[in-house]
Length: 445
Image 1 (tube, rainbow, N blue to C red):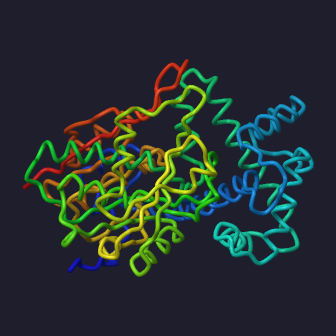
Image 2 (cartoon, helix red, strand yellow):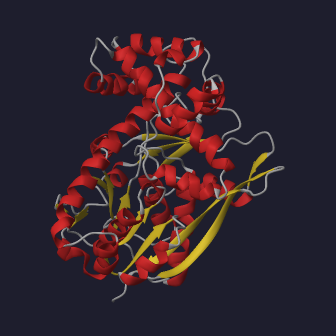
Image 3 (tube, rainbow, N blue to C red):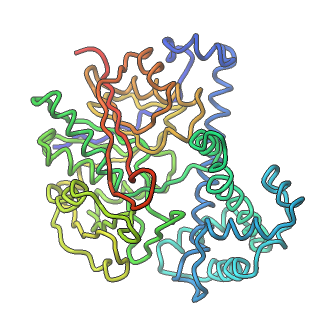
């Protein structure tokens, strides 16, 4: 019988961060100031969760075909056209301060926002629209919903424009984008490609320790595919991919036995936690669709195709997905999760920067979440991860920030291996589409 996950989530204290005190003191923190700092960061992270949800609402409003017949608008193209239409003095002020009258919003976008406001005021069985209606009811008053949604459009377009068009012209584009992410809303975006990254990382873990058996796994920020900035797929309901891809990889690689495996998805967003908790009683039918679209010179590598073709075989019944008739040039498949597999997964609320679970895990996975934290927040997140790892446990991530190696060495979580992953080639591009997985191991036996 798989043990039930506990709920022992606790806020960190100055006593918890011994190995990092010198670095934290250099950042201006002390025993006296640490608790107020942690409380401020936690409050800020909750605000960023709400802001991230509103980002998704705007991306949905621009792209969805379920609530209006108006043509979809790609958010980056909307941001580019919007900013380009502004007089130079307004443009500079908007990009610098985010201040501009909402009357500046272009007519096509305004028409979609108006249609969104009308849809939010009507009942619907669409799961995305239902969530956004609930979000709007707690975020905007009925009387000023249109004006507030317009202001959110301005905020989101400012970020998108700065990321896509301003950062690209910076002396160090990657660093400019990273700086933007450390203050933006906390997104729940997730794509199946992250599962490939983790699969290869777990393969390395298996190769380094062939006899290793994994029983307890923590996934930090598993995400939920609600309304991404690009590649919105409405043919299927919102889904969380990563927990199932991780369980599938562990079983397929022989790293775990499903009879005593426990996987905990920990997320600061209560919507993600609620979704994952419902799956134990109601095993989901996953409709897996590749985030990358194979067209216009983009071609998947044979290794990625092989991974996708095997995905799900260890956790459920797999078949071809009808969503391919809607989303052309994407890999797609349906996985009906078996009940005994669904019982492996649990969920806990967790702010990885300011909180930790009083539990020990054999593997902790955190992909695409560490870029949201500044260097001080990153140190605290890594310290919490190290504290939750059992001796000899491994940590997998894809954050390449130089400070990370220094911090993980200081907390007894040294780097042991990495691998660069190529997902698809792009004709004429300077580099293929890919990512890197980094593996650390906690000291001890």
